[in-house]
Image 1: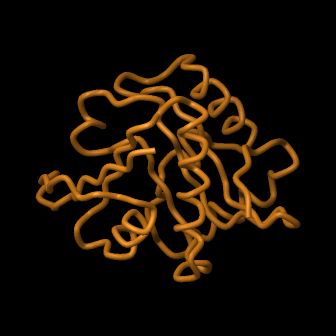
Image 2: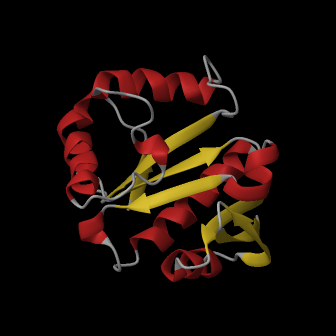
Amino acid sequence: MKLIKLTSNYKCEWESFISEFKENEEKLTPLAMKGNANTFEEFLIETNNNSKGINLPNGIVPYDIYFLVDDDSKYLIGSIDIRHYLNEYLAEYGGNIGYGIRPSERQKGYATKMLALALEECKKLGILKVLITCFKSNVASANTIIKNGGDLENEVVEDGKVKQRYWIYL
């Protein structure tokens, strides 16, 4: 398993990945897996700019978006974004990392592996204290974070829902 940044060779795989979430009537998580793009070409431009901090919308920090693939396949299993630093909102509710696994691939251990790989990318960026949040009701995500060394700091309420805030020290 490995994390990749998408190139033009992944257009069909990306479209299939996004479609699976829509067909299941699920919110795209993380939102960065599509961003504000209407086309794959727009997505590639947006992710490149976001990584460099170019033309970021108000309140958005630079981030990188990666996709989990098997070493010998182009099939996109999940996506994970790494926010380079925390602003006020992210420090309270969003954290450094957001991730999601395509619906047909859940409960197979992919999220745990993907997060472990992303933590290695965090080290490369010099992020040694990583905040990850999840809704308290999302037990699978909490378990993924804990398996990767997450320590629950506290719980906060956002829009009437309880979020848990975990720290991972690298």
